[in-house]
Length: 130
Image 1 (cartoon, rainbow, N blue to C red):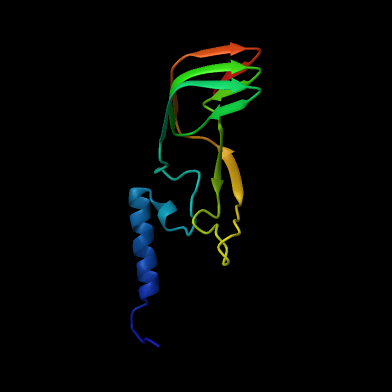
Image 2: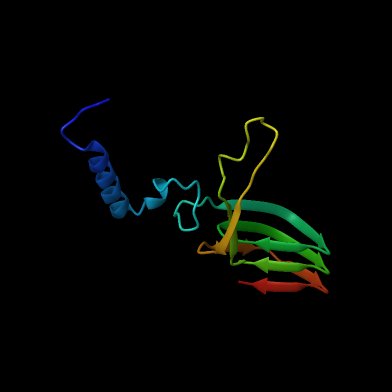
């Protein structure tokens, strides 16, 4: 037991809240592993010479830079897909015995950017630009 004349829990919460409002960093202290609106999503860079798609569904979503050519046959290509997914158990996926894996996926609409540099050759395929 620690007896003190000041309610330090409240002081710390108020300080944290003030800091978060000032720097838009609520996502860092809301006890959530990931969130759709956090500003520090990592941008993935994917480079290839030619990606060959046959009867495939290929989607490029939030915070992705893709460089290369795409050759598609009977496929669907979406560049700038608005749907994004997060794992609500990120960092907590492994269970006690070390072999089981858990995921809880949520979906939302993207607010990030997508960049594609290259060419697309498509036969009997659909291309959607978001």
